[in-house]
Amino acid sequence: MTATTICLVRHGSVVGAETRRFIGHLDVPLSPLGEAQLVALAARLRGIRFDAIYCSDLVRTRRSAEILASPHRLTPIVEPALREFAMGEWDGLTADEIRALDAAAFKAWMADVGRFQFPGGESLQDLEARVLPAFDAIVDRHAGGTVAVVAHGGSNRAILCRALELGPERLLALGQDYAALSVLERAGSHWTLRMLNHCEPLP
Picture 1 (cartoon, one colour):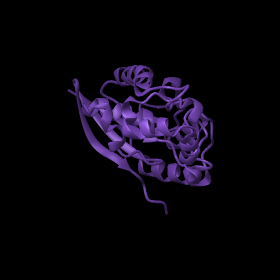
Picture 2: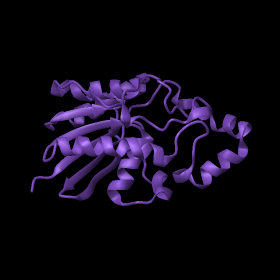
Picture 3: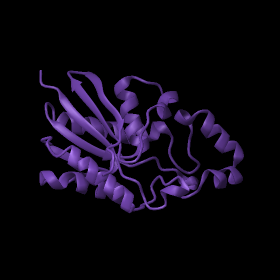
């Protein structure tokens, strides 16, 4: 049986990343650092024969996917269901601003991130309900092949947790840095993690 390989990539660093704001569905672009991170990762993956490259519809993932796809002469396929959490009222705010707005809600998020409902936004269950079927469809469409999926910290963690059979309380146990590469391999119904949160060094 030929395994299916998924290169799961988080988008590169974004403009304003140093403020550590919750950006969720905000459509912020890659920073120059983010562009450089993806160029380095694209060089690492140049020798892999991808059947397709998928990404969410936000500009930071679309641009990341374009950089990865360029050496392969592929056009990224946009899948809106791969978007980050909708963080509702918290989109665009820093942790300090959220604490000032609603200290109890921020404490609840820190205590149980896997079951928290963002005010006016999504819970992990909401995110899983759109991300996981879209991911499964991609995997089934390219059974036995190799595909890159460029998405976000939240959506990638949901995919990894399900593949590794980890509960929602382990969501943040899986590192997902900017421009990080994780590699999953499926044989039959069994998933194997080949790489987690690898960040290519910059020249």
